[in-house]
Length: 245
Ligand SMILES: C[S@@+](CC[C@H](N)C(=O)[O-])C[C@H]1O[C@@H](n2cnc3c(N)ncnc32)[C@H](O)[C@@H]1O
Image (cartoon, rainbow, N blue to C red):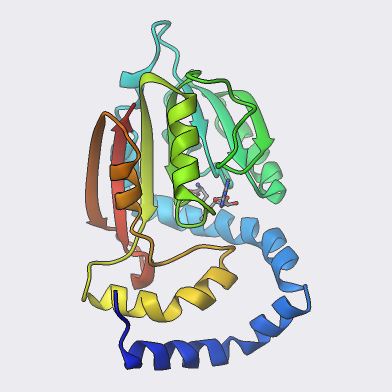
C-alpha cells in the first residue's frame, strides 16, 4: 500500500519522540531490557485482555472436539507467554508450552500452579519457526494468541504447525492484525509501527496475517475479522478462528 506524505511525516515525528529508546538500542541496552521486562508487562496486560475478551472463552469452547481417539486432548501452545490461555483449556488436557523468551518460564510455572485442571507434558524455550523437539503429527491442537504479529517468519511457523498437527488436528488463532485499507486504524498503525516494534519486542501492527493462513495449505479455515473490545485502537483489529489440517 502506498504511503502518503502525511504518514511519512507523522511517523518521523513519533520516531523523533522515541529517540531515547533508539539511543538505548544503539548502546545495546534496550533489547535485553525489553526481553526481561516484557513478561511483567504481559502479566498485567493479559489479565485486562482476558477480562475484556469474552471472545476468548467462546473461541476455545470447542477445543475438546479435536481430542484424539483416547479422548485426551494434546495441545501445543506457541508463544505461550505467561500462560494466559490456561484457564480456557479443558480439564485433563495435556499441554506443551513453548516460547522463545526464557524470561516467561517462571510466569508459566506460576500460572500452571493456578490451573491444576491441566497436565503439563513439557515446556521449553524455542522459536515457533523451529519446533524440532516435537515429533511429526503428534498433537491434536496448536494454539497461538497474539504471537504471529511478532514471529520472524509466519510462513515458517505455519510449516511447523502443519508438521506437528495430526491429520484432522486444528490450529487455533486469535491475533491482532492490520486494519482495513483506508481505515483510521490502518492509518495510525502505519505511523506507529516502527516504534511499536521496538517497544513491544518485535510486535508488528500492520501484518495481514489472514493471508498467510489462507496460503498455508490447511484443508479448512474458519476465520473471522473482529474488533476486539480493548482500549488501544492500534490493536483492535483482530482475526479469530481455527484451521484444520
Ligand atoms: C504478546 S505476547 C502473547 C503471549 C500469549 N500468547 C498471550 O496471548 O498472552 C507474544 C508472545 O510471543 C512470543 N514470541 C514472539 N516471537 C516468537 C517466536 N518466533 N517464537 C516463539 N515465541 C515467540 C513472545 O515471547 C511472547 O511470549
